[in-house]
Amino acid sequence: MPKYYITTPIYYPSANFHIGHCYTTIIADAIARYKRLTGYDVFFQTGTDEHGEKIEKKAQEAGLTPKEYVDKIIENAKDLWASLGISYDYFIRTTDKNHEEAVQKIFKKLYDQGDIYKGEYKGLYCVPCESFWTEAQTVEGKCPDCGRELKLVSEEAYFFKLSKYQDKLIQFYDEHPDFILPLSRKNEMLNNFIKPGLEDLCVSRTSFKWGIPVDFDPKHVVYVWVDALSNYITSLGYPDENSELYQKYWPADLHLVGKEIVRFHTIIWPCMLMALNVPLPKQVFGHGWLKIDGGKISKSLGNYKDPREYINAYGVDAVRYYALREVPFGNDGNFSEEALIARTNTDLANTLGNLVNRTISMAHKYFDGIVTNPEVKESLDEELITSVLNLKDIVETKMNELKVNEAIDEIMEVLRKCNKYIDDTTPWSLAKDETKKDRLATILYNLLESIRHCAIYLSPFIPTTSATIFQELNTNQTSYDTLSHFGNLELNLKLNEPKILFQRIDIK
Image 1 (cartoon, one colour):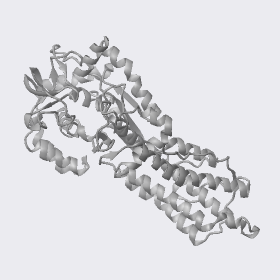
Image 2 (cartoon, helix red, strand yellow; image 1 turned 135 degrees about the vertical axis):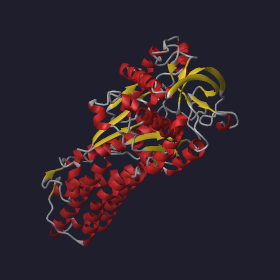
Image 3 (tube, one colour; image 1 turned 90 degrees about the vertical axis):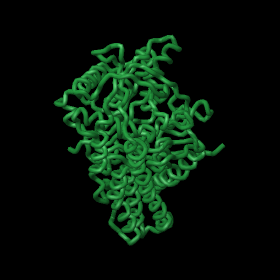
Image 4 (spheres, helix red, strand yellow; image 1 turned 120 degrees about the horizontal axis):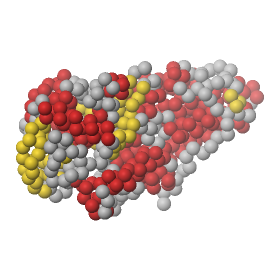
């Protein structure tokens, strides 16, 4: 069985996740579910990044220890992912004991071999982003990522010899042209960060204590990027390279990240792995942001809502579908409730929901819910069947290219053809003529079988809805293997009563 390891970044634990935070994880979940569907042994990892100065400050403000503070809010992330149907296999916390011990060993190994050395850091630092910046990288003197004020810091620190691996990194990019996607992100890394010259990286702090101690110099704590980035291998048992999970899943097939942290995953992380003599991940994809009215989502701007409000109002599959379908993967996308409602009404309630409802309703009305297939085929049937059978290669190609929104649109296009097939064949007219009952049975079977195919393809994206469709069809033919042939829906099935999959929503 082929293996597939997919990760999201580990998130800052927060009580205020918004829909933009969910975007990466929804996409990763859809890809993981698709890979499982197609026969892969998938390891899908997400988690939380719990150390750092801002956590320490928030804990002090709350009158708690940092660990008490993160423990209190960590369940919010897990509850949100459960609400969105996120099917992760492993949830890592950087406060996990095995992770902390592994990070200390990684730090010591790099120090012992001369890739980490002690010095003094002087420069500009963004507390919310936990990022150091040179003067040239700032935008009007502020953080280029979040736009907040930077503070000048000076402290003793350990440094990682990032500059040592510059030429090796460029060579790796040349030899692995698909390592960073989209291509625009690769060009940005090369032109804005690597070719101007990599500077050695500050990898410890002494100005706060909430972090993993450097065990041979305990006044230092390991700085966020060595701590956070190494989660992708510590979860697999590294530095024990003989551990079962490490042997099975590393190197990762896909690191899925937001564009604001591509730099860390395609420069710092590869150089760390080169220093450790560990294989690099196969691909890093830096997607765009989900914005509201073209701007960032934030509480201070008044455009923040807890994602569970959307889930409660419109349903989890409507939220998942909108995030996956509406945003061209790799580019920024715009989120609005009006657009979510419009997409739900058009695609889910009308194209999909109405098709399923009226097809099963006709089967009950004309055949008491039992449909056979007397093989009375015409050209219209062959056109529909060809479209359905072509989906397998089309969807596979789109998903392999991470064009999730295009894969979904191809499935919806077949569903639109099913609706047109109904209009062209007019089963209600055939039902009036007893001599055309066989033809009517064929039409309904073709529709039911087409719906079954599409429900399987849609299962990674809207899993709850697909499960409901399978229940209505009363079929056990729900595996990917059944899609290579048209006609696997069992004959003489007794269909269950149809349900309203998606109610049309009035825009108020």
